[in-house]
Image (cartoon, rainbow, N blue to C red; front, side):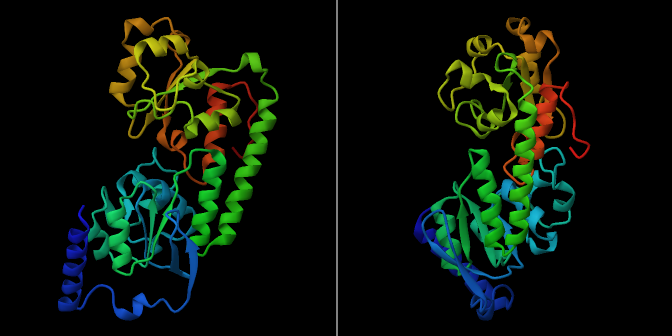
Length: 317
């Protein structure tokens, strides 16, 4: 989007606000009680001490926020966040309106947020447009490791003034990691199972992905990594055969993705794969497989127990 267009949109919104008398007023933009946070794009952003009209431009950050604050402090929610199989905070997400599937600049401005939290793939035009309107906008990097996810949770907790809750989740996840390590001691290296996690975003779950890092904690071999495939390499038939996975995981949003499952279950070339032969093509909630939030520890425990059902279960899992 051309910068001139961005500024034209902002000007139109300001004119609308001035004519109708609704929307952001001068005093709401002064934020008398503010502090500064470092945005991922290198900008130092002044944010309210206790923001009350927060919007995240990502379903991943919706879930983090819903674990930190009450739903009435959010002014919008991503549609995916309301699906129980996609977000472990779906019931709380359903309390938030409006439900959004995209984030056009003019719609964000009309919601009158006092804080916007944006993923690092948000276009510069949107970020600049929001800041030009005086809306505090903090960019948070996407996580590709378990530790970076923990950092995102504590960073977002700090941004919204909920540091204590951020530290609670930090400690909780590390306790769950300790449990994963303890369980992993009972699995000899040569008996670890290989897993292929397939996604509509082909190659998304391969070498260097968040799931790849999660596998290290779960004592699981991520099949693309073991085969030596570079990051983001699509999983063609020949590569799947070479991976020879023990399990195939398919993310479930509202039931198993039929096109993805059919590709594996109905392909004659795959019928001798251990995953097919042993009925180990599993639909797992997307909330486990794309768990970029405070639930990452419990999600890893659930996946580990799926792969190794013989492991003892903690009654609190």
